[in-house]
Amino acid sequence: MSTSVTLSKVRKHFGSVQVIHGIDLSIDPGEFTVFVGPSGCGKSTLLRMIAGLEPISGGELRIDQELMNEVPAAKRGIAMVFQSYALYPHMSVYKNLAFGLETAGMKKAEVAPRVRRAAEILQIEPLLDRKPKQLSGGQRQRVAIGRAIVREPRIFLFDEPLSNLDAELRVQMRVEIAKLHRDLGNTMIYVTHDQVEAMTMADKIVVLRLGHVEQAGAPLDLYNNPANRFVAGFIGSPK
Ligand code: ADP
Ligand code: MG
Image 1 (cartoon, rainbow, N blue to C red):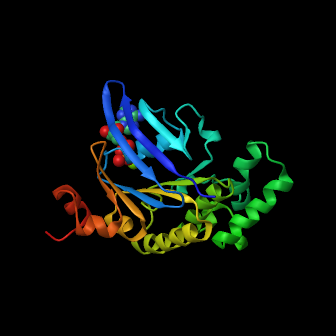
Image 2 (image 1 turned 135 degrees about the vertical axis):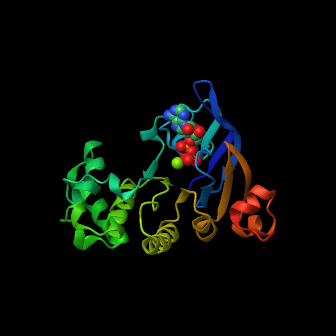
Image 3 (image 1 turned 180 degrees about the horizontal axis):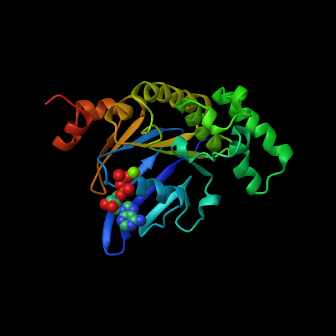
């Protein structure tokens, strides 16, 4: 029941400046794909175009073969995970998870089991009555992921979700997100500028540079057969 994502010659301009230059990419159903590359290479812009938060300037975006270019974000079946500080500070954990569904008009009786299920998956059931400031960094991050899970999306997008966590917690959350992917089986796209995250989490790595794809493939293929010095340097292949 997983979902494919296909980009054909996708471009993005901001005014007269082109930041994404004709990207071709296909993501298989259920794949965990990592977009990696230096700051400013276009990772977030690409993710936001897939989510429908940013219009596409040219080319085609398809989800399960269906053309998405003009489909509004809310109709794409995509949920995006933000950094944990995007939680509503004045709401309980339960309300943080329920709020988006309730504002979308879902009945309370339908919202409650979804929230319970997400809380169970993330093992945050005992925290549902707390406020975000009463949570640890890792617990907050789980709530941020929970807000995506309750929407039961076809695709999960993560934009550097761990960048404001300390090193130890980052390692722990990587493992948890990988487990989430195994348990749910959804197609997931994960953006990071961290090579270690890319190498340890990805089924497929897409190395971006200046709005182009330098190389895409399985982590070990990129490591063993980097297409050029940039990929080698970025992935950490031996010279
Ligand atoms: P990354 O996430 O890889 O760091 P971004 O996708 O945020 O990169 O940015 C890619 C390029 O697009 C950068 O040069 C950035 O300055 C530019 N950019 C991003 N958003 C906008 C915007 N709203 N208006 C103008 N330029 C933008
Ligand atoms: Mg970014």
